[in-house]
Amino acid sequence: MRAAFVGLLLFALPASAQTVLNRGNGFEPDSLDPAAAGSQAETNILGDLMVGLTTLDARGKPIPGMAERWEVSKDGLTWTFFLRKAQWSDGMPVTARDFVSGWRRVLDPKTASRTAAMLWTIKSARAISSGALPPSALGVKAPDARTIVVALEYPAPYLPELLAHPSASPLPRKGAFNGPYILKSWRPNDHITLVKNPRFYDAASVKIGTVNYFPTADTLAALRRLRAGELDMQTPLPSTQVAWLRQNMPQALHIMPSLALSYVAINVRDPALRDIRVRRALNLVYDREAVARKVMKLNEIPAYAYVPPHTAGYRGGPVLDFKAMPYPARVALARRLMQDAGYGPFNKLRLTYAVASSPDSRRLAAVFQAMARQVHVDVQIQVTDFQITLRNMRLGQYQLAYTDWLADYDDATTFLDLLRSGNPRNYAGYRNPEFDAAMGRAERQPDPAKRATLLQAAEKIALADMPWLPIRYRSQSLAVSPRVGGYVENAGNVNRSRWLWIK
Image (cartoon, rainbow, N blue to C red; front, side):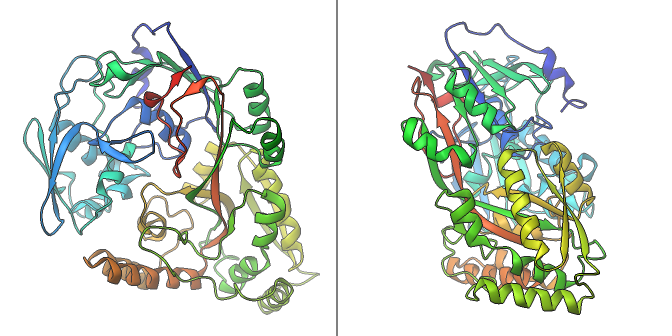
């Protein structure tokens, strides 16, 4: 954003003096370019600035956005969207061509978008990402200024949810925005200020005039700011303070089950980690039950698979084959595997472990470090800013890294696609033609039950290869000041400022 979209910082309209909302937003954004942004912190801000063909309501569910309605062919492969009369914040109309240009840009390999895979359901999109086809080959047409025809590679009933993601935004034009807010200023590592967009198609219902987003990687400090009235909302919350919040601020505390996986990415390109015995030993020695029930204490479910069990249409998926094994037996097996791989008390395996600087990340890193010692692995914790950790993961410059994934839509593919060859978010560097082929068979299957079976077969392949170490299915935590109205709990922890007000 700071290179390609620096012009955005220069564009601002006078802010309404009526109301101000101060939001604690986790980490400092790395980018507000829809083609580059991908973290939840970035998505929260872009959700206030940009509106795609669809958008999310107060419950986090897809509703009409720039498209006021759409039609779907009987085979589910052709979607036709009809745009409402809407304007950019500079007064120019939002057109179908803006969307075609925006999507082509995301998929163009020259853009190097880490969210390109979000659009792979569109015909020819994946081939464009790989450089096999030009962006002009994308299966999207604009027969007129207010009609968009989208051809898909395979049926995707979750498309309205997917198209609400920032990666599916129209191409921003000369520092203008089409959402309920515009960007007034960005002071790095301090705050980002948005002000109400008077040209937004539903501006009359937007009640808050100014929204400030603060980076709050130090969640303990953020909670103190919320208690002092300096913040109105904060996510995430430090797990060590949840019990205190339950006792002292129960009306402000919100903990919701969600479609989110917390996991350790394992760089399978690393010489030591190419060995499946090492990856299996690390998976075995990680005590998921202890982390979920004794460390985090958020009523989260220990994870023995990559796809959360409550994902739509995905009941009874595969799990790691040692799930039923008692923990002492797991540790004993892990030791034997490490010994077979050539490691022992006098020849320890030293691995770096990259974590972001939040208090919970540090605590969990120390726990993992102690667990790994049992199997002759010396874990060296490397704490960096979130953006640096993420950048190193993208570049493959790490060995182990703690991260998580919050579903962009309610379908197993939002998790499994992260392991497909060519996906920019395949940070593990995992490549298995058998897995890729299984995913291809699943996406071409129109029958939902058969498709789920095929996806489960693909997940079973990946679980056997262990490119990830799944930890827990995360809950979303949030504190909301009593002065904020309109907040609705939802599994995606999506709360656009458009739907809120100050009491």
